[in-house]
Amino acid sequence: IYTKSYSIKNKIDKKEIVELLPQIEIPFYFRKINLKDGSDVSNYLLRLRGYTQELVDLFNLRYSEFFKRVVFPIYDHSQRLVGFQGRDITGTNDLKILTQPKGFKKNLILYNYHQVKYEKSIVLVEGPVDCHKSYQFNSVALLGKIISRDQINLLMQMNNLKTIYIGLDPDAGQQISKLISEFCPFYEVKIIQLPKNKKDLGECSIEQANYYIENAINYKNIYGQLPAL
Image 1: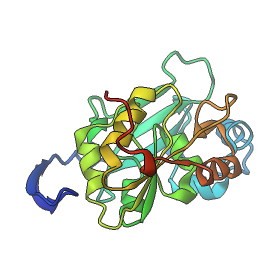
Image 2 (image 1 turned 135 degrees about the horizontal axis):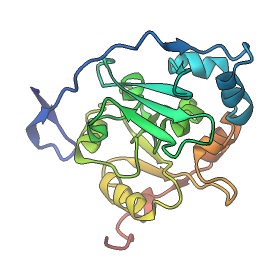
Image 3 (image 1 turned 180 degrees about the vertical axis):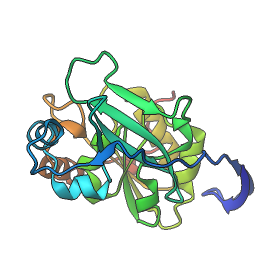
Image 4 (image 1 turned 45 degrees about the vertical axis):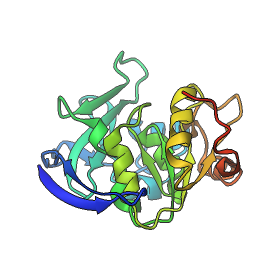
């Protein structure tokens, strides 16, 4: 662990103990992905998920042939590789999403934070695929449905941050209310609303995701009128 000092938005200087996850390396058998090669993973990403080669390269996506999983490398705030999330592409594995290494502490990480930590706005989503589809708006993913105090602190350390778009799945209503209450005093907060036939941004095309983000609802003017949690 290491100690760092920073000032959070209420202007109270404090020291936070930030736990560093162990750095790892990409296994040699996690191969790079070429969407033009006609492989199973290429068909999955291109035809079923609407990926482009630009997205694949931007997030350094890999493929595990043995486990039949597309692999999302996870980096910490300093761009150190600290984990992987593998997504089954066959639709037959009971464990659709597998996070490694064993015991990985997702609550300490915001996926893609290292690429957007100097931006003025971010989109907060649940998983890597949601993040990829909304990458043009500086997305970060919780790697789950619940935001931790460590993840909130990471956002608070973004000195340039002015606007937070909340793009959690529609079934995370209580968590969305919590985030609105947490961030409204300090940031412009906007809520992304999806049509009923889309359960998350990951099901959208990049163009659709951009449209829903651009038309997000601004909650700043109704802060204080929100029901207590």
